[in-house]
Structures are given as C-alpha cells and as structure tokens.
Length: 145
Image (cartoon, rainbow, N blue to C red):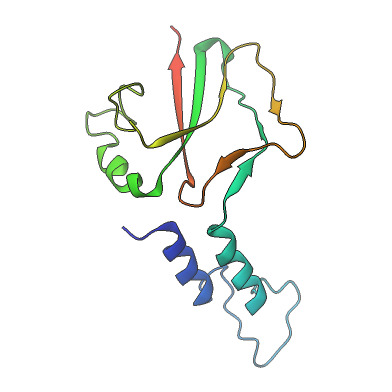
C-alpha cells in the first residue's frame, strides 16, 4: 500500500489533483482551480510536517446512546493491516480497543469526550503533537443501552 505522502505527491505533481482539465497554454480561465508550481510544492511539503491539535469537540447525534469516546491517531504503517481486519468478524471496526488490541503500541491519544464535557481548546502556544506519519484518526465509542 502506498503511503499517503506518495499518493498525494503523485496526484498533485502530475496535475491530476485538484481536477482541472483545461490546458493553460491557450487561455486564461475564471475560477481556475489548477495549482501553481509553488502551491504544489507547498501542499506536498505540508504532508510531511508535524502538526498540532489545538482543540477538540465531539457531538454525538444521540447523546443518550454514547457513554464516552476516545480519539487517537494511528501510525500510517499500521493502516493496511487495520483495513484488512476491519469487518473480519462480520461487524465494522475492531473489538477490544484496550490492552492487547490491534492498536497496542500504535496509537497516540488525541482527545476524548463524555456527557457534560465541553469543547476543549488548548491555550495559545500549546498543542498535542500529531507527527507526519500519523494522519489517520481512530474513534473508539462505548455505547450505552
């Protein structure tokens, strides 16, 4: 499985993304969605940078059905294996989020929610690190009956 970086790099640098079919050789178009060379380089470079989560909120559709939620970032190297295991027992997702689970050692806490918790915004200059190789987010939801 190609990394997210490889996929985005190839799609942007080959000009397949964002989709824009007209060729700039002959005309100037209003609302041109194509990217300049500098914009392409910026976008590709952005994927490789560490980012910081500075706030978190979760709003369940039926609040009475959700006991709590844990959100975590998953290492890109683990995604292929998790995609193969998703639904392997006939149900979506995976069992046993906790110790010994499919994500043991490969998850990084992003945030959580439980009834009564308001949106969390961290103070200026503070953020939870999200390294470039952790672009996939997992959500563990404990439902109530």
